[in-house]
Image (tube, rainbow, N blue to C red; front, side, top):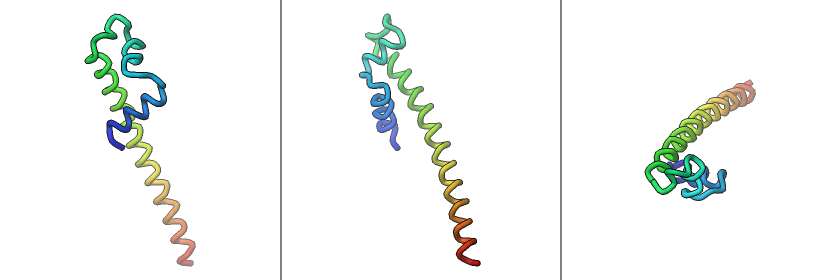
Length: 75
């Protein structure tokens, strides 16, 4: 999943525009796009890290399941 796709996912979940997101953090800095971009970058980094951990966990679980199936078929 690309960073752009993660951002789109976050925006869909939040149901907000970039401007709404800026205002949610601090109405006084809502006109400073860099502020919201920094916030969004950190949010994207966090989501990306969680997705990577989830992917590793799923790969590991599927690997264990596959090994068990192979063991059963060899018997």
